Image (cartoon, rainbow, N blue to C red; front, side, top):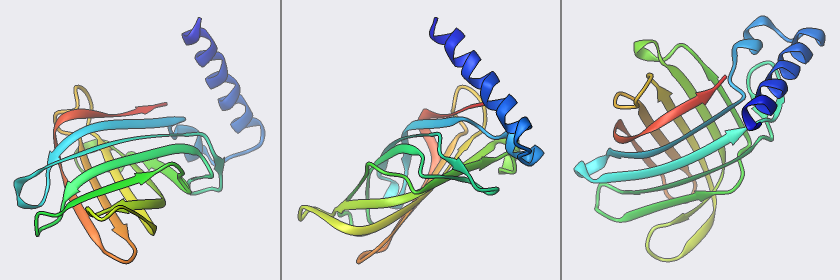
Length: 166
């Protein structure tokens, strides 16, 4: 029953996009994306992440005000644990221009950061995830965090999966 409802919603969404005249490229984009897993980041330490994003208002480039969240835990070059938590996503989008022919998923939003001293507001995250097909062994994730402290990490997944739903 859930698959039937999802199929009906997808059909209505596509018909609506055609009816209101969205660009042809917009019709190729995903309706949601999610991922989770781990990769080796700075200092060959495992970094863990999870995200989910869906919906929003199409503005010709990406979806604004979608439903979504992101969690991340890694380490800085100095070995300090760096946790990122976001219960909101400002925008997201995707395209099939990723190296290797995969799909890029990009999302950004406000974040709280914990560097071992408690949770701090005033940060913004930018993440890119690449879905290079199943089972996810060549998928890739990058996170950049801006705010009072800068943080960046990226890597090919050692476990987990990035998935787009189109």
